[in-house]
Image (cartoon, rainbow, N blue to C red; front, side):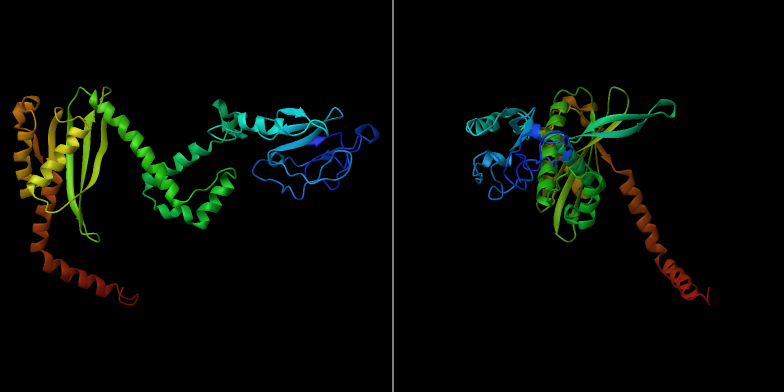
Length: 349
């Protein structure tokens, strides 16, 4: 910040000497002074008083968030957050400064300090538009969490030095967080979105098709169930939402599968809005779909539940292909060996 007033001994914290020189006796020479922010606080042991009457160390903590400036030949105390100015001098004291910091709206803003930047955008007719943008730390963290979920990045990406360096070069104002913090942000976003969707389905008047799948993780030896809802909205667009991805304890019997699916339907207010339920073609799923209609109101189902159970066509096709491949297994293996032999070296190729 350029100023035409003041001299080397100005009342800025961290100045070289503590003498206050009358601006009227100095030449109008521009002096560039660095504005202190609340994030870079000058140690009070190095800050000396600029008031007349000698050098004294400043012991008040307000000087970490306030600074002295000369305005129209008068000494003023300015807040680093709202830039409000207060009377300063040997007789003014500092009692009124902590009171202002406690009630300063900019200091206690929930979003934090906002920094305006300029950005070039492309307008109509190839014109370039210069507009101002404001950086929000919370929005950047939310977008980062959505990026991790959308592309299935590991949470350890937050600790990668290259990723941190890249984010710092894009936006130096962004404060990088750790993996635990971004995990909590993702869980909080999921809870908020889940509550919205539960309330949405509570007032939903159309039918919903449900697909579910259950499998056992190889490295954990645990069974998990995923339940997805599909429906067509008022604009005739197909929508799909993952309602549940939960651990299901063993044994994965028909009763256990039926109870887990029924709890999910009740939780999302869909027990009376089901059109069909699609599952893999296995014995336990078939038995589960025999038990499930007894838990539901059959009058709310199409044809009293006769069309509710739908076997997954993709799973049936997969079983057919596996049976066919088992017959051709020996021939395919021999063919692989011949291709591997002739392509092993450039000379054979």
